[in-house]
Image (cartoon, rainbow, N blue to C red; front, side, top):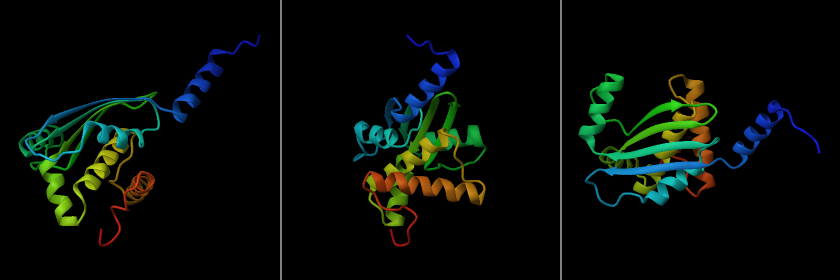
Amino acid sequence: MMRLSMRSLTILSIKAMSKHPILSMAVQYASEMTGLPTSAQFKRWARNTIRVDSEITLRIVDEPEARELNQAYREKDYAPNVLTFPLAEEPFIIADIVICAPVVAKEAIEQGKSLEAHFAHLTIHGVLHAHGYDHEVPAQAELMESVETQILNKIGYSDPYADGE
């Protein structure tokens, strides 16, 4: 019987994780908005995004809570569409993601998108932030948008950055 070194076992474990990462996800509804995606939908979108085992808490909130969190953690006085709080990135992801339902609904109308498609996009966006993606620099933004579009296309949604969508 062949004995594997600890290093070999670690490499095999990492390769196995990246092939079929495990998602542990809690979805909390703290919004009064109706017609929100189901927990199963949020989990499907996240599952198609993760690259390593991930433990994510996704909280759907209204504007006051989103604004309060944005002020407390980013010193910005508005309710954003999504906030991501990565707690660990290696060897697995642990993160809290907050999505502001009324902001998402408003943006979906303004951008001519379905509410479901926009929630899918912002869930994927938040999970990518947890993986270390960012959009502060143009090259990083281009990469993040490309990855988002690939994932959305794979699961049946159109390019959120295409004109007229």
